[in-house]
Length: 53
Image 1 (tube, rainbow, N blue to C red):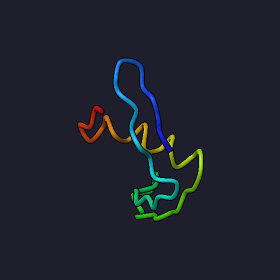
Image 2: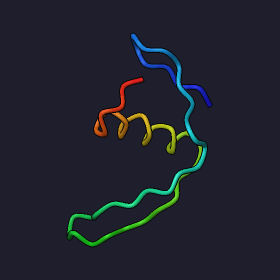
Image 3: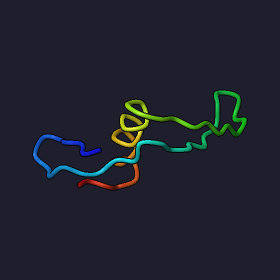
């Protein structure tokens, strides 16, 4: 699916992702996300990784 950000060109997002992270107790977690929430997570994480499309 294409995503748009103000001032940048559209980009493609995966419809399903698997995210690995640490919870509030520093325990490693892994979870799969699909659909709209997967796209939102990618949108929020990209700039943290220095990706500006």
